[in-house]
Length: 258
Ligand code: NAD
Image (cartoon, rainbow, N blue to C red; front, side):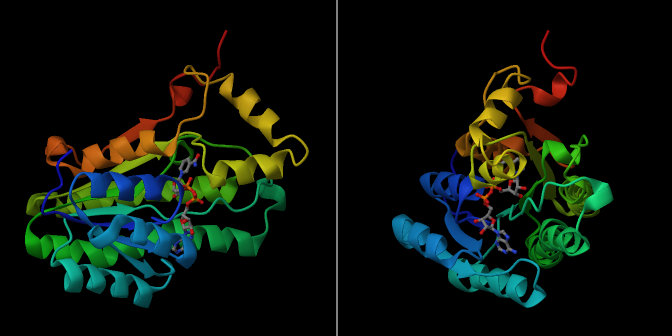
C-alpha cells in the first residue's frame, strides 16, 4: 500500500502489533511517530526506520503526553493522516467475583481513557484538515465475553462504542474511524495471559485454544497490521464505523469444531 506523503501516529508502536504497523507504514513511504511508554524498544525501532520515523515516549493515559505526541507529529511532519490508536494492556486473569479494583482501573485507564484521549486530541487536527483515518485496536473481546477477563472485555467493548460514536461525528468532515478486532495473536500479551492461566504449561494453552480456531493457529502481528494498513489507506475510502475481525475464524464458530 502506498502511503507516500502521509503521516501516521502509532501508539503502542514499540512492540507487537503496533510495531508491525509502524514497519508497514514505513515500507509504504509514510512518516511515522512511534508512541510508547517502552522507551528502549521505541528508540531502537525509530533508529531502524531512519528518517522515516521519530519516537515519542508517552503514557497514553496522560492528556499532556497525548497533546505532546500530537504536537510532535505536526511540528516534525506537518499533518496527521493516519492514526493507529493501539496501546493496550491485558490486566490480570481472574473472575469478576475476585477481580482487583485497582487492576480494573488500570486496564480501563489505558484501554479506554487512552483511546479516548487519542481521539480527543487527534480528531480536531483531522477535522481541520478535512481528511484522516483512525483505526482503534479493539479485540474479539470487544464483541464477545471471555470469562476471567472482566476488565479487558469491558474495556474493549468500550473501544467499540467510542469507534461508532466518533465515526458518526467526524464522517461528514471526511474523517474515517474504524476498529480492528484481533483474536489471539502471538505477541508478549498472549504469552503473558497464557502464563497467568497456566504457569507450568503456557504452550498447552495455545494448543488447546488453537483447536477451536478454524485456521488452527494464532495469528501473527503482520496479519493484523495488513488490515490496519488497509483501513488507513485510500483503498478503504468508503469504510467507516466498521469492525474488522482478524481471528482465524474463531468468533464465527463459537461452538468450536466438531
Ligand atoms: P504488546 O504488549 O506487545 O504491545 C502493547 C504496547 O503498548 C507495548 O509496546 C506497551 O509498552 C504499550 N503500552 C502499554 N500501555 C501503554 C501506555 N499506558 N502508554 C503508552 N504505551 C503503552 O501487545 P500487542 O498484542 O501488540 O497489543 C496491541 C493491542 O492489540 C492492544 O490494544 C491489545 O489489547 C490488542 N489486542 C491484542 C491481541 C493479541 O492476541 N495479542 C488480541 C486482541 C487485541
